[in-house]
Length: 216
Image 1 (tube, rainbow, N blue to C red):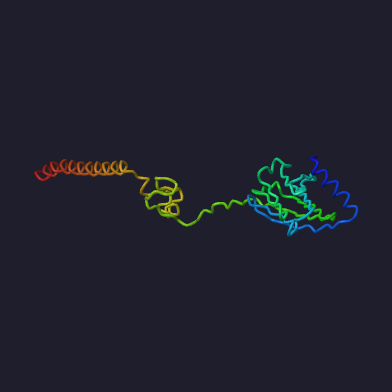
Image 2 (image 1 turned 30 degrees about the horizontal axis):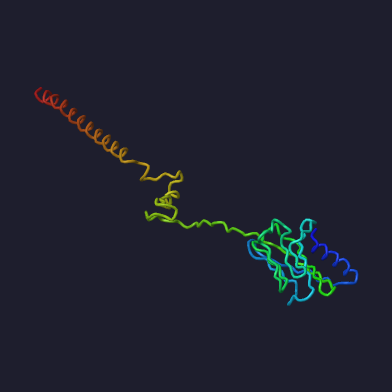
């Protein structure tokens, strides 16, 4: 423990026996990543003023910053390195880029002319909430133009009513390829030709029989 911290703690204990004032707990809400500003209630810090800021979480107390004999100390907690500022004129404590695990009870122990004041702040740091993307139920018709995701257009939404007419998700046009259509046409033509040949052969066979019958 440094000499400045020891002097402040001993001074606080000795003066507390005389009597001091304890303020009510003030609730402070801040979003994660923002600046936390805690005001000790001093409008002008002059003369023999000592301020000790502490942080309590999970029954553990940690010194955050201190002003003693006009000097500022902010090197106590490595997690707060480079993020803590203590204003020399007002005693305002500022913590940049506040995090959710830094929620808890902050105290400002102020000693002015042997009079002790303790201000308490219940700090609640809210985590940043990511809004999930909501899919629209509306039918989107592809225009064939590149979308924002890439140079390939999405055609999955074309012919939106096909699934209702065909429960098996089969496209009446797409299910029959050009090859299958050509094969069907060829088979139909062959059947037609076979039918014509059969009729001609039948007629040719029946013609001599009719001539023989007429000659008798």
